[in-house]
Length: 405
Image: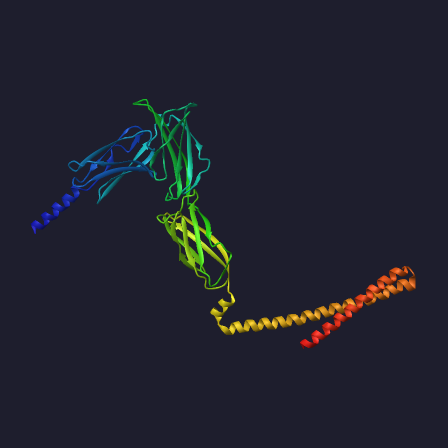
């Protein structure tokens, strides 16, 4: 029993001896100071220590563990972000955390930094953002400074010195950039030794999902038979023209009649699939895409699907075809009879009007005496000729209608 207790005591003592811890020498530092951390570590493991502040990476370094204790010194600069730093000591199997506050000092905020660009503060994933800042000292441009920005993943990126105090960079927002608020921070410093001055400035921006651009390559027609195989092909790109390739895509689908059909990539952002319709009518199709970062997009295509006599025969059989043909013959006969009766009625109306015109002509000539004889004879001959034509046409139509009974 004593041996068992002794073994347990040794195990607990070993676990206690190798439990990791970390703490700063002070709870608060100023920019440019040496920041000292110490604690306990495990001599049998590889250790690393890293610091982040508001998603911005400050440092990430391996450390040596000597006799279960360590001391780590970080020489801060004016390019480090100010604020609350989260510092993590870790191995493959365990970790320990602490926090330290890093404050600006007068020299670290000496230069004035003014953003010249961007003019907008909402950026799509995959978009190009031109970042430009003017750095000055009491109105005098600061040339030759070390100027950096922190990107959406918190990484330091060097800005180009364009001269006359202007520093800039064309930044491509990654397709998998974290969505939401992004504090765009620019830091700068210049000088040596104790004669170093710096500046910092940040603006609040937002990262929003990328939009896909769809260019429909096929179908080229607006109308297809129900028996046709309809080709669907689309060129899908991000807003900056970068193709959506197979390595980035999570799904690309054709949505037809509430069913989803996967599209296959043929390279260079082209996606395609054949589709066999199973019904006719006006149809709305959708092509939707989603990449591995959660960016979504959709477009629609409207087509008319028809069903020919062959399609009807295949779909409904001979009885339906017979019904359709009989209905067509009946409709034609009905239409023919109705048209003859309407035409006969119009001819009879014109016959009555022509008789009235002759009577009116005779009243003007014989009763009123207001018409020359030559005009009377010409008009009378014309009306009588038309009357004879109408009587002949009426007679023929009466015979036609009688034969159709």
